[in-house]
Image (tube, rainbow, N blue to C red; front, side, top):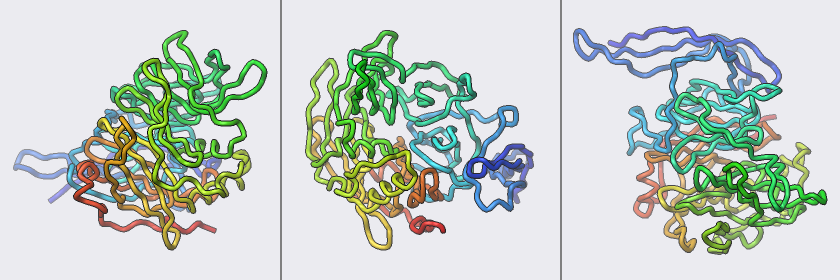
Amino acid sequence: MRLATLEPWAGGCVGYPEERCHEFYIELRELVPRAPDRWEAGKVRWLSAGCARKTEVFAAAMPPKARHTNLSLRFAASGMSQLLRPDACRRVSLAPQPAWLTSGAWSDTGILLADSLHGQLLHYDLDGALRQVFLSPVVGSEGPLRVEQLIVSPDGAPVVQASGRLIWLDGRYRPTRQVELTGRRGSHGVLQAVYQLTLVSPNEAFVVGDLQQTNENWIRGVIHVRLRAGGKLESVHRIAPLDPYFDLYRLGNPYLASVGGRAYFVDLREPASLNILATGREPKRRLAILSSSGPSARMARRADLGEPEATTALYRALEESASPAGLYGFRGFLYLLTRRPGQEGKTSWTLTRLDPADGKELYSVSLPTSAPHLTVIPGEHHWALVEKGPVERWGRQTISTAVFVPTEWIEGAGNASPLDCGGTEKDLFATSN
């Protein structure tokens, strides 16, 4: 026999994104009998008792006073949980669905996803249920800073990029350190925009961004940022300001990664290549030409990402292209994610392990997903593959499922390719009318 305890929790939900309504949740926690006088707490389920008739719920949002205060998020690159065995692969439905994802990280109790459309973090448990929503822990003159990206530092600490600022967090989502990125000055100009970044140490970052020079000209590409007070800022890998390939770095796919105190960058200009970036220890150099096909010629047309139609067209071109889709540093190796279009709107995904010393391909594994887009979160015990549908317009995308793939499967991929997690993918391939 199992009993359940009930605990009400008031929150809110968001339409798209202007329409708001109040929502009420009921927490169901199983109590499992283990002895005549002893019970154990089992699974926790959240049932929505409000907004039930809404046709679309893109994200949850709660006033600070209404948040559940007993939940402590212990961030880790491990992705370890008693609810998910290290040798178990599992696909779960995300409810409610996120709106727009750029990145994520593991906590001890699930995954934390950065929703840049609403400028917040979403914490999902391993059953795919939304447990908590966090606005930025730092408030500016116009309210909480907007969360844009979530990464994990080399020492395992979660770091949020919000409104051009890096914010280190502790296990209770409290800021422990803050560093301004945008507005920093260097010999090459002022850093005005950051599109993606990686940390090689607590005091050293590489970003893809824009530098404005004193003559009002712009430098685009990869910039080396030393984060200590008075630290230097310099351009280490330039891309022409009007180069159409630069727009691909603004779509949320990570092409910067660090491992072993070094930073690496995928240059998408044909032929696509893996580069080690310049530091005080060594110069920049190209390690390898990537065997995967580069972005299609159609993608090389300059797009105005301020225009929704142009953004949608660029995503459509990406969906039809065979190209690199992400670079990750993990346990001393690099992992390159590549995509290839298949039949009926499905996509074949491959993860290739690379030697960071020379860029040599060590092995590849086919991932158990055919979604049009992915957000990939490496972890000690599992890698999370958040499955995303076609981009209908900026901020409009079906994000209904996530797959938790055992890390031992990926690291032993030479004996277990292609991977098969079972389960059923949602209908991610057709756009809504």
